Length: 268
Image 1 (cartoon, rainbow, N blue to C red):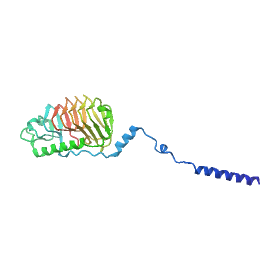
Image 2 (cartoon, rainbow, N blue to C red):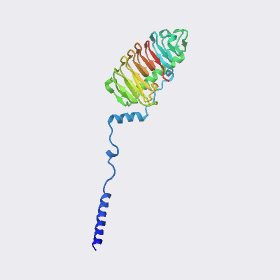
Image 3 (cartoon, one colour):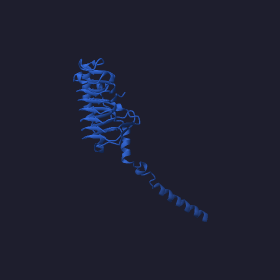
């Protein structure tokens, strides 16, 4: 009899325990299932993984390492790898010599460096129109991922892919790193001037390619002595390279380009 009472009591207690368990919420809370991450980690992940930013179509302008509407001045000796052209200004305003260019020098008329100069006004007209269209496209991209980053001072930063916008000048007083993958796109919209200090450099990390980086600048662009730059410059005004500065990219200027013993390599 005592044994039967004990078993009955155990059964009753087991039922109570199981009923209580059924009423418990054993699923992890939202905060447990998805622990919060730092804001900057979320931002970097979103920018790196979205892949939604399309590159800028340079058209015929993409055939050039340097393209200028109002001339190219030069302090000998610069080393240019890629095609060079000026239009609509006469070829007399293109002051590079044949020995400085591994590529073709195009002019709109019979003036320009000899014997290498090639006259092709049709190609140059198309290239300039495409350069202007590319500038308007890139400068007009909406919904930037980053606005007024660093108040225009981006020195020392590591930047992820995306669309950046500044309403004033941008400076690079210390090295800047662009980090991403080989297909990631960076577009920098700069409403003011753009200046890079002497001996500073832009570093590409993780497979980023210079051909996918676009600096769209309304004001004058100046790179200090022995600085190194990566990417395509779409300039509404002049682009000035000081002594010994180098660029892996394109200089597409709607006014003049100034060279002083520089190295320019068109990205492939």
